[in-house]
Structures are given as C-alpha cells and as structure tokens.
Image 1 (cartoon, rainbow, N blue to C red):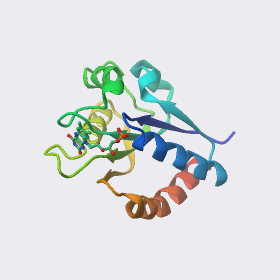
Image 2: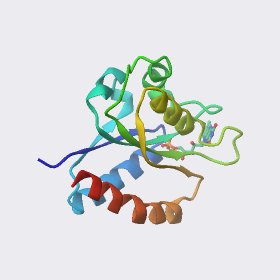
Image 3: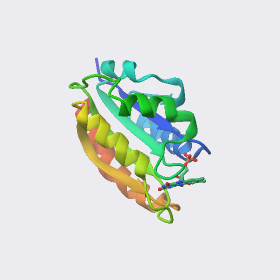
Image 4: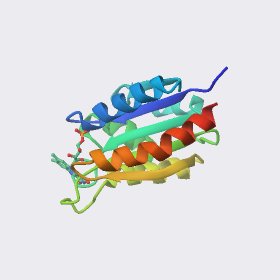
Amino acid sequence: MSKKLDIFFGSETGNAETLASEISDELTDAGVENEVTDLSDYTVDQLSSVENALIVISTWGEGEPPPMVEEFYYDLEDGKAGDLPDLNYTIVALGDTSYDEFCGCGRKVDKHLETAGGKSFFERLELDTFYEDEVAEWKTKYYPKIQEHLG
Ligand SMILES: Cc1cc2nc3c(=O)[nH]c(=O)nc-3n(C[C@H](O)[C@H](O)[C@H](O)COP(=O)(O)O)c2cc1C
C-alpha cells in the first residue's frame, strides 16, 4: 500500500487554504495519495498517527496563528501533541515582510514540531505576498522528493 501525505492548512482569509488545495490537486494528478485537512477542525492528539505532513499556514496578529487555528496552535505550543517520533513534516509559511514577525507562526510551528520529535522532511518555505513564482520553483523540488519518499 502506498503511503499518504496529509496536507494541513491554517488560514484566515483563504490564501493558505487555496494553496493547500492547489498542491493537493497537483499531487493527486502526479499519483500521490493525499488528504487535505483544515487545522481549525483538528486536534493535536491526532498528530501521533500522522507520518507525512505538509503544513501550509499563515501568520496573523504579530507573529500569531490565524484566529481560527488558535486552539490547535496553543495546544501544540503547550506540548499537548506528545511525542511525534514518526512524523516527517514540511512547513509552507505564508506572511508579509511588512510585519516584524515575518512568517512567525510557521516558524514557531516548525520549532514546536521539532521539539516534539518530528523530523523536518524538506526545508521550510517562507512566502511573502505575491508568491506565485516562488511556489512554482519550490514545487519543482518538493514534488519529486515527496513522490519518491511516498513511493
Ligand atoms: C491583521 C493582519 C496581521 C498579520 N500579521 C502578520 C505577521 O505578524 N507576520 C506576517 O508575516 N504576516 C502577517 N500578516 C500577513 C498574512 O499572513 C498574509 O496576508 C497571508 O497571506 C494570509 O493568509 P491566509 O489568507 O491564509 O490567512 C497579517 C495580515 C493581517 C491582515
């Protein structure tokens, strides 16, 4: 049985959600089994059963999570996910360089998952506004790698 990629998004005005669903469609076309989940409907205790994750998340406030994702984020920060030794994860952080805490939420999620024992599968991507070209370039590297990893 081939392995699955769990694509999570944390979004307030839809940018991260749209990007997650675009990536999902393209990976499906490339034969990569995947499932998209909204982090506002998800609890950290479920992470222990996830092996391969792509987390697409924006930053709000001043380096804070999108309001709808606060519960998930603060539970993760508080260590309520427990140990995640089986997790391979990649972060795609959305933000805006005009804010002091550029991509602060994505950076902190990365740190908390690492603290829980997760392994970064692919270097974190940090996106400013107008990220089309950067995403297109990232996909040319990430897609073959995740395809090979998931078999
Ligand atoms: C009120 C507000 C606060 C924001 N705060 C930050 C911030 O602290 N750091 C950052 O990098 N981007 C910040 N952003 C930019 C958003 O992360 C960016 O617009 C992102 O694309 C939104 O994605 P979403 O629609 O998926 O929520 C902020 C945007 C708004 C409107």
